[in-house]
Image (cartoon, rainbow, N blue to C red; front, side):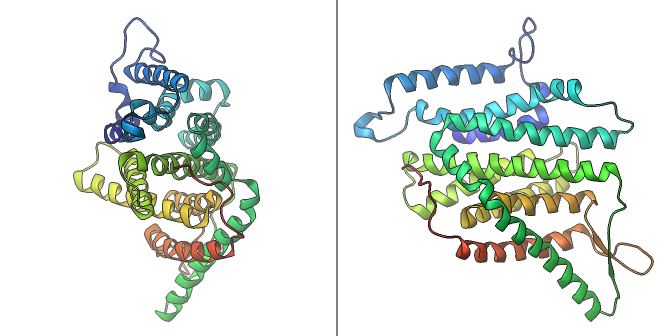
Amino acid sequence: MIGLTLLTAGILRQFHDGTPGSPYVSGTVGSLLFAAIFFLLLVSAREWQIGAVGGRGGKGIRLGSLTPLLLILLVEKWASLTLYDPIFYSLAPPVASQAEYDAWYKVLGGVLLILLCVLLGAFSRPAGARTWDRSRPSRFPAAAVATLAVVAATYGLLWMLSLALGGGLHLAWPPPQPLLIWILVGQALLAFGEEVYYRGLVLSELKRLSPRLGIRKPGLRRWFALVAMATLFSLEHIAPGLPRQEILRQLVFAFALGLLFGLIAIVTHNLHYAAGIHAWINWQLLGTAPGLVNDSGVAVLPPGAYIGVGLILAFLAAMVLARLRPGAPQVHEQQ
């Protein structure tokens, strides 16, 4: 059931228009997706009434034990696929281009995802508490310093490599304009929202649930949660209609990113740091981050060069950040 839900949640982003629904009720509450959520809410209400007592001496798992995870996965899809557009159309100002429209949508989408995560945390108090502990504002300064150090070191290493190869490159910044600011802000908000959702709520709930599935060793629990979360993350970041090899490349790239961001979140207990690296990668892919150019002003390195070096340095910095973190986590996961 968990595997089917992960698969469903992962592909709904691309194929939600094909979700069966009633012709007599609004699509917001008349789709099969909302029917599944309503059923899970009824199961949750029953679970709260009778208590979390398992059968056969507390062993095994009931459907009620799965509802927090299933609701975290499906409610986010229902809200983002049915509510974001109407809210955007009612709040967004008139725009002159598709690029401005997309930038505004990313800003609003990031804000709405962060607010939605606050609601989703109520479905699983242990996962919610662990997520909020990893995203406390007090963790932001250390994350900002570590992110800036990783980005600066990435540019420095690539610049020194260019000197060693005989090419005199220099750093060029994108031309300042209002649209650039909105793109940077929107991608930063969206990156933080995704880290709170994937590496916070989803990862924590999968790890919390794993002992009930018979996965009791700490190492196996961690990797089960990481692989399941990264699979969901990769499925949601594919673009249908592309050649098969390109879709496979996207799946592998997104899976590797999801796995690495999850490891960073576990090692550092800091979602702000994972979000900072995530946002910088998004800026690189969109061409809104600084880049090394030759004397003619032509970019000579693809985004993958910055991302590859940056991810290696990000993980090394995560190990340093983990050693500097005072004490153990204040919020302990319930078994």
